[in-house]
Image (cartoon, rainbow, N blue to C red; front, side, top):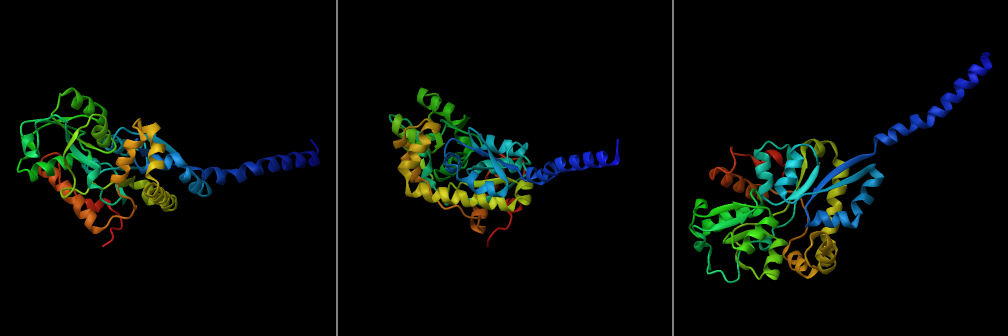
Length: 317
């Protein structure tokens, strides 16, 4: 082949390869945040509104959403590396940390003690928590209401073994409650509001005065340590949804209703019992979470004492 032809072919090959070489850095920037969410709460509203995707696109990030039936299942997925970020109540991260999950606390919502309760059937003869002695109480093991039950029993001068706990996820818990297989049901919103409205369940004790009922945003440590910019964008997007939901509870309820399978008017009750305003964890919130962990250890619900501070980067004092 003449030199000129060889030179031309080499030049043409180089020219064709140049766009592909230039594309490699751009493709490398297309990363994905894998977010776990539950049927109810800020994250499912964030998913529906699509504002997070808008914030992340200029940064070269996309979002993958996965639904979970409860906080314990969500954090198990984080533990095995299936998701990077999610939201749960107070108890699930304690059980997950005890199981060795590589999680860190990222942020939290203000207390919402009315957003969880111990319910009894409307015609139940039980009128106080003290009367639960020897009775069956359904709850989701390792969920926020696990601690509510402990504190409510303590307030009533009962011990945790004084009741028979029946561990069931929300749907099964409601079925057992309606069928009379259990005497009480410890549950959180919106299932709490649905029970109050649909079957006229009576609130025996909510969290007011005994628990805070914080919602926490948690991430896999490796993801949080390496991805400050998209994480900041994610928290900012959550803050915007918080503000919108607080100002528009009826519209937010209508948005949630199809995915949750609960009427919008019931969801509005639940949303108005929540608190809004995502923020970093303070020393006080960490201390509250430490008390829950210590309580679960004392009850032998977790195998070892935990240090919550160890999984809260940059605690504000």
